[in-house]
Length: 192
Image (cartoon, rainbow, N blue to C red):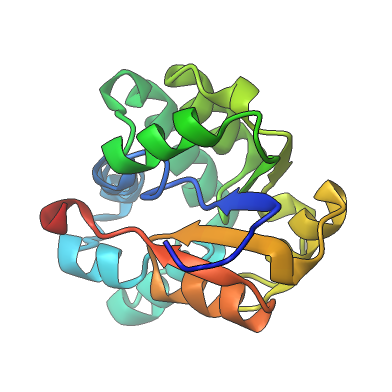
């Protein structure tokens, strides 16, 4: 934890609060199967934090395909919903949430849809811990742009420099830094 007296904690969701990245990879594989498109696990993790539409566009370019972004996105979301029972929380982050809950306000700041974030947090009985949810449809520019974190700070009515961000991706840490916020890097599952 960085030094400082922070008045709000802002958490990324996937890979930070919820150990959902393996489940998201399964959902991607299910969604892409119709087109015979492969998204290797190493590439999936390297692209962590990128918007779904950008991933589909890049996969189309890599594989010479014309997968419709909206269809793939819907199928990926539907597949993810079927895998919800497999979700677990990231233990160290969960312990921190439980210790700090009600001492300072919390926000989730995610590149995932509100549908996905709400389902993930509900599956783990954590949704009620968060005062604010900022999800993909709430802002125009994805991480590493600071827009999503600045929006969360504004909704919590806490100055950005008094917010502490918990993130698992380089894009998320860059967004927090660009917003003028300190951050804690949550290691990937294989380093925990």
